[in-house]
Structure formats: C-alpha cells, structure tokens
Image (cartoon, rainbow, N blue to C red; front, side, top):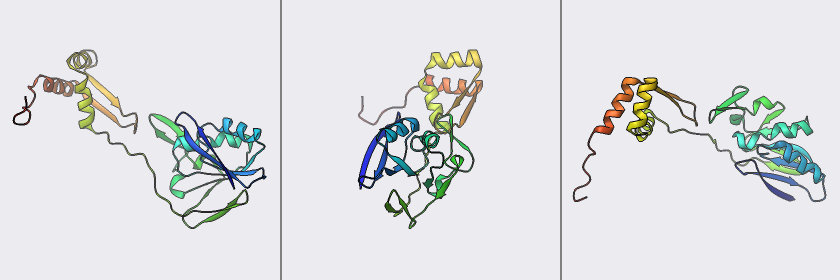
Length: 200
C-alpha cells in the first residue's frame, strides 16, 4: 500500500491518500479545506478517489468535500455518527460552516465496522469524541474589559453607555450596561492587593 500525506489549508491539516501500488483507485482521509486543490493534485497523479473518510467534523478536515464532489459527484463519505451534525450548518469562530450531514451520501461508521476502499480493507478500531470547548465566562470577559484601561472604558461609557462583546470561539454574547462598565472602571481605581509577605 502507498500513502501520500498532503498538508492542506490555512491550518495545514494532514490529508492522507492511500492506494494499492500501481492502482489509480485511492481513498482520501480528511480532505482539508481546499477540495479543488486536492482534486487537481489527484487528477495530475492519475488517481481516482473511491471514498472520503473523515476522522472528525471540524471544518478544517471536511471543507474539501465539496471541491472533491465537484469532480466526483457520487463520491461516498464515511464518518462517525456523532460527527454528522444535527442540521445543515454549524457556527464556529463567528462563521457558519456546513455539517457533514449536509454533504449527502454519507455513511456512518463506528467501532468494529469494516469497509474496503481502493482494495484496502479498513476496520474502525476505536472512536473518541472530539469537540471544541470554550472556556469563556463573564469573569474572563470582565477582566478583558478592565485590561482595556481607564481611557477606553471611559470612552465606551461616554459614547455607548454599554458594551456588547461576542466570543469569537463559541459566539456567546456578553452585554454590559453603562452601570456595569462604571463598576469595572471603579475596580481600576482600587489599590492593588498586597503581595505575599516579604514581597517588595
């Protein structure tokens, strides 16, 4: 078996192309987010994908599917049921991305399942849920506002009498009234707590 590794997209996602030696049929694992580029590479090498295998649903691993489907419309996709998604889109980092389910012609596979792609028999040995977790909180956002300093807080109070901040990771919105901003501003005027005993 031959395996080629390509680093695709802005995040440099590893894409794996596997095939039997001297065969034009191949399998694609995680097509990254530049499907047209990958399709051109495959065609230049005289290769024809039989299936796309997704390790998980993150956008930088799946966004290459539409580009591959433009070249091979019936190309099947395999992924774990937990990675299908519940609708057609999901929001991450303040942007909307398609779910795996939205691509169509997707076959869920799980531990113990076996398939043959490009003459290579594959078995799913183990699955582990992968998900983005955001650790934003009102406390962290308040600290971020305080870190702007007196001048910027005063400007927010004077010009907007409030603030609205959106986490760029999970899209949670934090709203602060003018009174809340004034309370944060007052924290800046409080003397710093003493350091550990003996510290200067």
